[in-house]
Length: 408
Image (tube, rainbow, N blue to C red; front, top):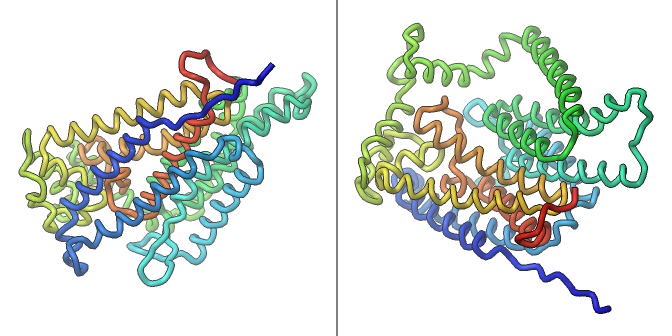
């Protein structure tokens, strides 16, 4: 009997969606970044760089999307990804470039700054998914199975404690940079991957309890032993929390107008756009009223120019993108594919939520950029790689539409 070969097709709607979002993002960046770019020699300074990073990221995104998802299940691939991410973070801690009190970058030449934490976001997803798939395969071969004595504790160790601890070790180096927002993002992505990993609730309870107790105990001991250094290192975090609390109505906290200027001006710009906005390119706040308008607070400037309608349109585009990604998660045919799609979707989604929530003053300032819109070479490339991984799952790691479930 002739074997029917399964034809794999690319997810064209998702490909068109990412092209639409990145082109929209370039237009927004062009409209917002002119004054900051002009100060560096050309009003196109940020846009021209972003176009090159976007082209490179899209090429990598499409190349990855055509690769078979099982290629990434190879322990050499996900193991190397974890080790590379870990070594990059350690190198950054020892030899990284210090900028504005944070040691988060590696300088390459005189013009390029590389941020290893963006690599770690992807390597964490890949290594967690790869490890979980490997453990499942080993158990099918009769390994990592125990007698009833201490079985639950041993299962919890291999299913939960070991992978989460491995992710946490790298995350602690990110926190020490200090980079609290990235620490929270990697923690959230790890949590979402583990939720969709198929491990038993008993492993969750036992493993989660062990990790939580050790993390709290180690954190308290380190903080009490280095209180002054920690307070000085994270002074900007405490200041952001004070600003948020004061603006939320806490009268016991006093802040100066200069301390809250950035947040206040960004919020005023957000509200001044009205329904239709001032028009593309006509923002007033981008003329140094909001510093670094092309990065953290780009959404506020964009809404000032395009109004509520423009802001709603961008949010709608993100919602459509996430709905498409969620459908890929639902149709994943294995635990590996499901964790890859879950982790990469969560990575993009949490950064969108963080950025917009900050600009709406729902959260304290985090310094998280808006995916595919804000300027940032490393972030743009690796977010597109994350999207490429989702496309890869969609093409070669899902069951046909209408089929039920997949391999566990």
